[in-house]
Length: 318
Image 1 (cartoon, rainbow, N blue to C red):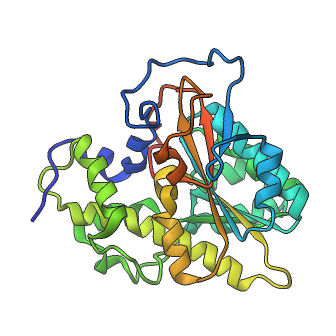
Image 2 (image 1 turned 135 degrees about the vertical axis):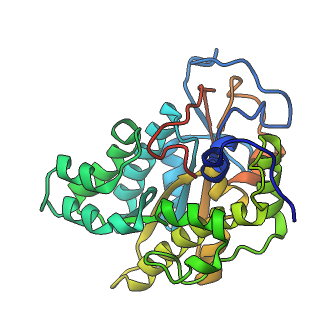
Image 3 (image 1 turned 60 degrees about the horizontal axis):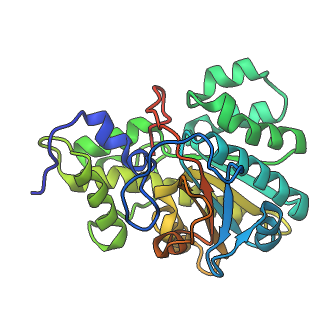
């Protein structure tokens, strides 16, 4: 049995994406650069087309993606610039497509009713926040997306599995929770493949949990991926008339390289056109695009390196 070394259980079970959201060097495998709030170029971001390696504007990204089925906004959970760009891109895609559904890792499936009530105007924001367990950075980072939906009458998916279920998977494995309320109908958690190797690599680099089987920790990650994929697939399957564009907010580990939630969605609905936006922290924003960055997403949002903090209440949760 492969067990993880000792660090707090919460950090290992809920921070797998969080750890890869920390500064990751120069994007080509080099050492992490020193922190900086703004690059020397005078701009606070650059977006690259991974197919050409050329910089593009956010409006050009929206033009390219407006006829897709699902756009994954893979994020650094606490990066202010990156979150601003996400909201701007969602707005630009809505202008072009109109028929848009927003989806969030940051809301769990058991609060869907509260979310729907707020969007419909049946409750005020205070009651909504009291009943929906928002992440502690909700106001500055996720509220713009929810308010866009509220203004424009867009559906929003509370996509993630409830955190107690993921924690239970760590303790007991995935089988005992499969019939629990709000669990996905099936989970792909076999310890093999590129996603598993990347997950173990992240965990090994940051310690682990004494006496906890790595397969259970990985399964806790996977139940989130499968819940989000199922939530998106169900929304697409239940759509009436023209198929909407789903824009999904998630930690980048869930979507980079087309793994995690992306591959699980494609298992449920083959043939979908899915695009991944990856967020990469850099000081030298205008450096040539690295091969690993190209592989991570269809478009690369280069954003300033920003100190990442684990936030009580959920923002460390991937």
